[in-house]
Length: 313
Image (cartoon, rainbow, N blue to C red):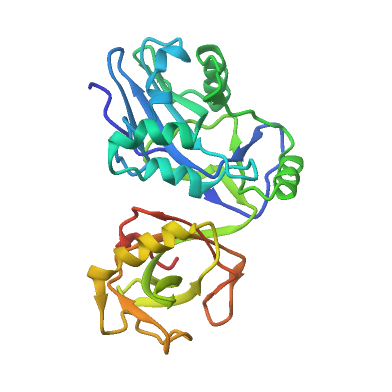
């Protein structure tokens, strides 16, 4: 494959929605960032951490069914809907977290996905990342033919109105982009801004509690700049099914330890069972408390983020 995977452009966080004709707003989808690479012969998919996902999403690999280009690099988000018909990170991770690829066809039926495309970086053997966003969006509309699994992300001029609609639907947030912005490979700056409706982070599990021999809550931590592992709260609610709690109970058996991994004392010290800090999980929460623990955390899904990347900011 001639097209080497790139690290995608990232937005910066803000609480203020910029105004002016040079800005557009798009829905921030609660899914998995996937870039599609097609060199004219082979289609390969990579996430933003450069982990390959070419066989996880055959709906995207059939690129000639939705893209007119002879070669292309597309940027987008893979999403799956939950029971409430809203994007669910938990559901999409059922597809993205597949380890036995022979299960792809089975899960393809159980967890249908959509690829929400929002940028084109390379097209017909030419790099397009130096073009302004408005030209790249126009190019996307020319080369992409939407179908039941493929959509081009709509853009809106009124960011405030879109954010209000997002809040009413209790969705993740919006991305606001400068129409003159180039696509900065392996970059992050304020030409793209994300405005979240709720907070989330990826934490490391350092302990659990049990009920009737099954894990029923997680004790979470993050690492500080010196590498110390700090307890930030416990969580027992969220989107995990009973089967997933049982699977987790089996998974922790080889990594049980006697000593507390956190340098500070959790409030559930008495009932806790300690484990090596290896399992990572995405959680949503309302805010940080004064004691620097999470207020109203909720489990979204287990992820494959390395634990040393889970740091306090």
